[in-house]
Structures are given as C-alpha cells and as structure tokens.
Image (cartoon, rainbow, N blue to C red):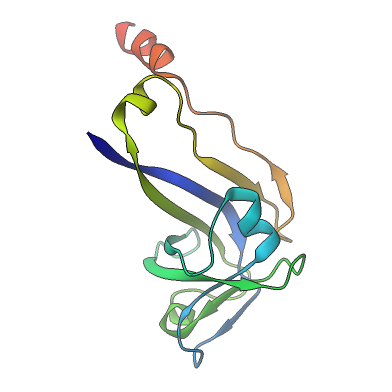
Length: 135
C-alpha cells in the first residue's frame, strides 16, 4: 500500500512580496526549490504562521538567489509581507519504505531573509518510534 507523506518543506519562509492581480500561485526562489526538490507548477499546501491561514496553490520559480517568496492572486489576501509561512508538498510512498526507514522528506528551515538556517532534525526511525511507544 502507498501512503501520502510529506515530500518537501520550506519551514518559516518569509513573504517578501504579494500581487493580488497576478493569475495565481506562490513564487519561490528557484534555488530554495531545488534545495528541497520542489518542482515548478507542483501543488503546494501553505500554512501562514502569523494568521493561521492554510491554502493550496502551485509553485512558480522566482530568480535564482533572489530569496523571493511571493503570494500571488487570491493567496495575496491570506498574508502580508513579513509573514512567516510553511510551504509543503506531499507524495505517495510505499508503506514498507516508510516503515523500514528508507524514506525521508527534504526539509529546510529559513531565516527572516529566506537564507537556509539548518536542515531540521531527521524524523525518528520506526524502531525509535516503537521504543517510544513501549515506554
């Protein structure tokens, strides 16, 4: 059986701009996209840490190294410049890959200027989870 899992995440990205009249989407620096394996036009789930808004859209590439994160179209109404957001993609993975520790999402934490701070700690393995549950 395949299960839907987090595939990539940009954690605490800072919104740099917005354009309510653009056709839609979320603009993301292509360098950051490549760092976590996020593809142009890929479906996104976005969570705004400042106001709690959650929405789906798709990614479009902003210039390499620009550190731009741009809310476009209707999404521009769900945040403002300076808001911190979480950008996530998901994919289907064989359950056995997850249970056997062969699957890990690509995650990057960003600072207030959208520079990488650190990769988040690796999720615990299934053995570590089993040990926690025995507790």
